[in-house]
Image 1 (cartoon, rainbow, N blue to C red):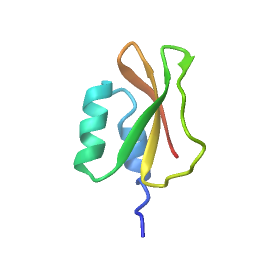
Image 2: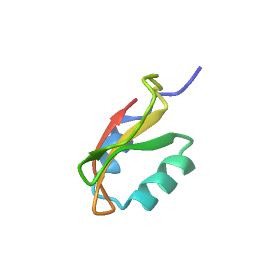
Image 3: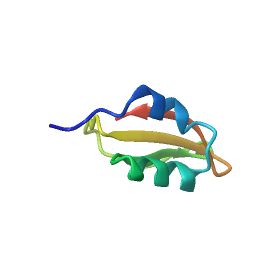
Length: 68
């Protein structure tokens, strides 16, 4: 059974640099991907993964995160 990313991690990565956010999530056993960078949408699959965060990054910092 996959574990769901806890809300504290979802909100905790907002404001971090992209690299720090990825390292923090990987250390906790979760995955992440960037779906929006500097206002441009990135290609992503439509699968839902409760152990992965979808990140929006602006100027190298995470501005939004959601489970997916």
